Amino acid sequence: MPFCGHATIALGAALARSRGDGVFPLVLNDAEITVEGRTEGKLMAAALQSPPTRSGPAHSALVSEALVLFGYTAADLSPAIPPALIHGGADHLLLALGSRAALAAMAYDLDQGKIFMRRSGLVTVMLVHAETQTLFHSRNPFASGGVYEDPATGAATAAFAGYLRDVGWLHGGAIEVIQGEDMGVPSRLRAEIRPEPGSSIRVSGTARMMD
Image (cartoon, rainbow, N blue to C red; front, top):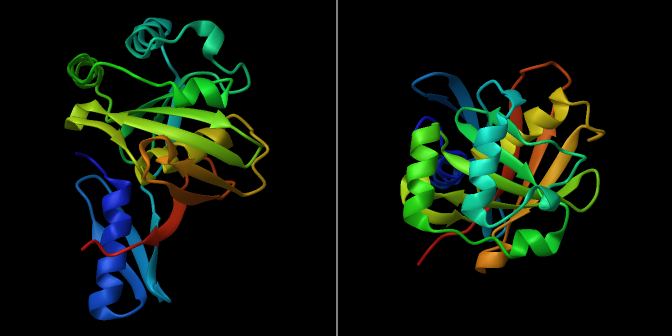
């Protein structure tokens, strides 16, 4: 796994709990980043600075294969956000859907998904729907890791925010991504977007302690 955003945010919360509020440097295989943690009442708030981001168009054959996997057609895609290969420490395929109902209906075969993602070098497929210019709903199949769906994917959120910057989306400097709703584990991530191409994305959220 090249970079795992939600694990990094959880680490920031754990470090703040054990060492106090602060910013902690982390050395990854391919980048040096920071994670911040602080206490907010009964919750722990955390933020990460992602590795550099990059994005590019997704090949039509890859998109077609993904659509078949998830039971979608080209008509289900949003023309406002073209399919793309996005990176913010790990590689993801982005498919933007035109309706919230299509996102809620996401289903696929886990074994076939694992074959597809590993063969294509993808950590996740990020499925999104834009409610507004700055509020998105997301689902992240993580079959490459044997997980049907990830409820909070900071790495994909960072990569997505970088892609929106690359295509000139009117994000106003930050977006929020609601994830995990359809699997009963809702999360909300905020991504702050600097204007410099390829620059790090700050992704923040809160974490709770598990019994």
